Length: 426
Picture 1 (cartoon, rainbow, N blue to C red):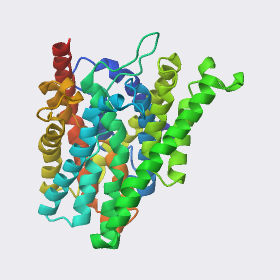
Picture 2 (picture 1 turned 180 degrees about the horizontal axis):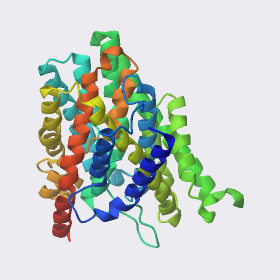
Picture 3 (picture 1 turned 30 degrees about the vertical axis):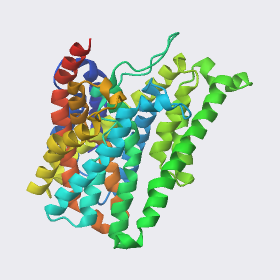
């Protein structure tokens, strides 16, 4: 692809990214669907000749590109959530009950189900577990049609009124980091062998310590930045008064870096940082400005990833796909995730919980709309760099197929289903 043609393609794609969200609002077609389709069409032309698309040869570039997309999306999601979560307030934790149940019950059940299905299809245990861990987390990048629109601001009590969108958004914000322990489990299984050799290390360090470190790092960075932005004695440092919204970029990079340097999960650090920052001056207009910056950057980065994914699909990415990958991908989307979600969200007899705020129809929608996306690519790229056994072409083909299937199925159903549920809720 020559430089001049590259500018033409990128310019046309940026135009699509700008106009598609509003243009497709009333149609059962999502912007990710169109962008993947455009990428596939570009891949059928001579334009991408010479473009590095082989996932094995370009694993590091794929890992860092998807990593950046995810942390930008997590900052936007954390700023968008209006419902508070206060460390010392049990009532606020109960109001997140549906989210905790999806994370503690739904995600591990999904991982186990996909891993068992892969193992039954003949995959090695480490490969099957990695597939389950990579495909289990829902995506904060491609699920904008079923997530909260953005932070509410103004002189009123800020809280979420849409339980369905809140649950899907908060789940997507947290499970990208909480899937990491299971990715490490697959890596340890591939590199260290028998579980007895590393079980205690996995529980103590990868499951507990790294989660705690990531959360604490995010809280400290978020609170420090909030103090500077809103309450600093130096007027020059009170950037909220000037509306300097680029602090969102500084926050996401700093929180991710601090979390990783300290040995925690950086994804959790970014999301918790955004939540902690939002907890300061919750109804301040500055949060909306910061969210807009993160959202626009996320849209541009997502455009790039979707275009490259679409090009790669018609340039050999699906060559290793077989009936096993198709069956596992479709089973995850149509059966495993919905079943695990409903299992997690079904109210316990005799107890009044926040899950009761979700009607039966909303619980089904929450269970079904577990969109797969960029996070799955990142986890696969990360694990592939740790052991050659986890870098199989079949895994790349299966994950790519599942993402595209999710984009198509969920993209077609999102608008009519959410419109129907919204009309009933009103």
